[in-house]
Image 1 (cartoon, rainbow, N blue to C red):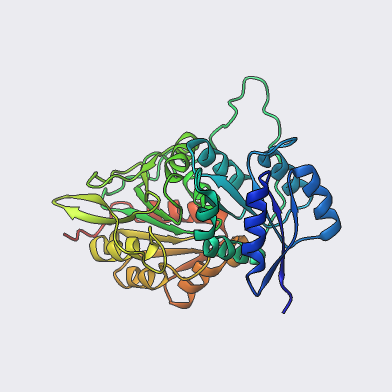
Image 2: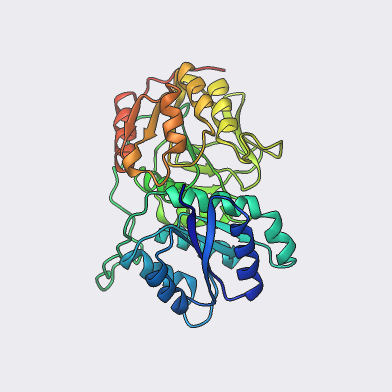
Length: 362
């Protein structure tokens, strides 16, 4: 079997050396080159035609984001970002995922050698996933007309009709999911039911992600806080490194944010969220499974369906990685398998057709 061929791009000689060593220890991958800046990397990519590149953010001559933007327009390929675990690092990483990077690794600010060695399994897993990902050409947005807001919110239905506050939408996602979840949320009207989201993401990144979505969406988007009431017109994202579930408190639903052991190797885990939805919300739930590697949440989504929910699963053609959606389909959890761009419209259509038809379960 041919090995996955990787080019490492980082201005630190130490990081280049460590990543090369980590990659070359794997039986199924090989580092075919290491570049200190994007201009050297550009020539290496032309000559060596790698399967995946790892890309630092802050580098001389051209930063990683500018390079990624050009790469995704001219020669789309799988990219794993290697970014520092800082507030700025988190914001830049969100931009990189928006531009088409498959995933990212958060390298520590201090103790980088030991830190990267501890992350070796995570790094190589992400390179492996990236090598199988579906990569699409990124088109730069057309320049806005004078006086037009830079990030105009899309036209979405003003209302979904008279809804019960009992309804809750649950979303699970992993690799490629930051952009897929955004596509769903920006197309929801301000009066839609509450949305509760588990996206596989490490600590330190979900706050930036939620803030980014909040600025783009007509609903309010935030990191979930333990014990807060779940309200219509709001989306709640599981904080990185913590499980998110829902509970009933009298007439209200509340968010439960806890540590706990990883489930399916993940914390937060979609399994934890969907199991709680099946137990507590049942027929008032709408489940959505988006792009991601592995099987996290598939069995729980079937439990959710068995409890009376209505479930949507992203189709293979529009996924970056079809792992989690495929497993959900195989588990018999899906009512509809749809292209990403059709999920929000179909969801709104269903909410309108079932407005006022909630089932009370306490």
